Image 1 (tube, rainbow, N blue to C red):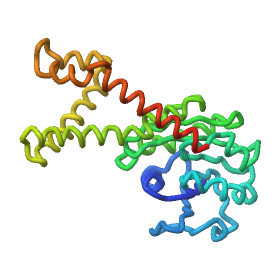
Image 2 (image 1 turned 90 degrees about the vertical axis):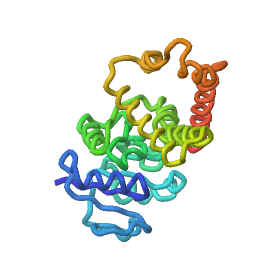
Image 3 (image 1 turned 90 degrees about the horizontal axis):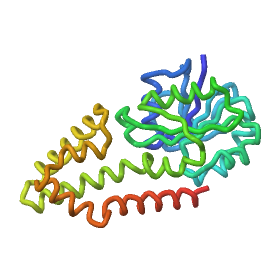
Image 4 (image 1 turned 135 degrees about the vertical axis):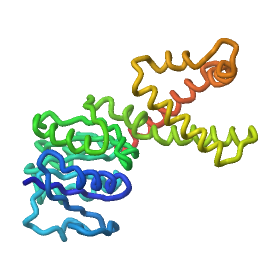
Length: 261
C-alpha cells in the first residue's frame, strides 16, 4: 500500500483530498495532511515535526501558499530526501526552484489544477523534472484525473497554462456576472437574469464539448446575417475589442506568474 502526504489544505487542497479519498488513485490508500488550520477526522497534523517518524509517504503534494515554500522545503529534504515523489500545485514556482530547495536529484512534478476540481471538472496541466519515471508520471496523472482531466506540457508553457486554465474560471465568472447585470439593466429580475446566463453558458459549454466543430464555427452557426446576435457581436468584436482585452488579461497573468518565482 502507498501513502500520500498533502501539505496545505485550503480550498484546492481539500477538493483534491476529498476526490482522492473517494477514488483512491494508483494504489494509494493512506492520506495524511499537514495544515495548522485544517480540522477534520483522519490523519491531520499541524506541522512536519508533529508527523510521526514512521510515516514515510511515497508522494508528497505541496498545496501550501507559494510564499511559504522556500521556508518549509528544507525540512522536507532533510527528512525525506530523494525517497519520495514531490508534486507541487504552486503557481509560478519552477522545477528549478524545487530542485534548489529539495536537491538536484529530487523527483519533482509541477501541476496546475483549477477550482472546478471542487465539482470533479478540473483540467490540470503537468510537467516534470528529467529524472521523473514513467511510473511517477502515471501516479501523478491518476491523482489529477480523480477530479477531472489531465495533460502533460513542457514547463516553458506552465505560466500560459496558469493564465488560461488556472485563472480562467474567474474570467468565466466575471462574464456571467457582467451578463447578469446586463440582463438586469434590460429589465429582467436578478434571479431570472442569473439563471438565463448560467444555463445558457452551461448548455453552450456542453455543446462545444460534444461538437466536432471549432469554437469559431459554432459562433458562426448562431449568428444569422442581420440578426440580433450579429448586432451584439459587432459591439463585442469591434476593433478586436474582446479578443484584445482577453489577450492583455492573459499576458498580465503570465507576467505576474513570473514574479512569483
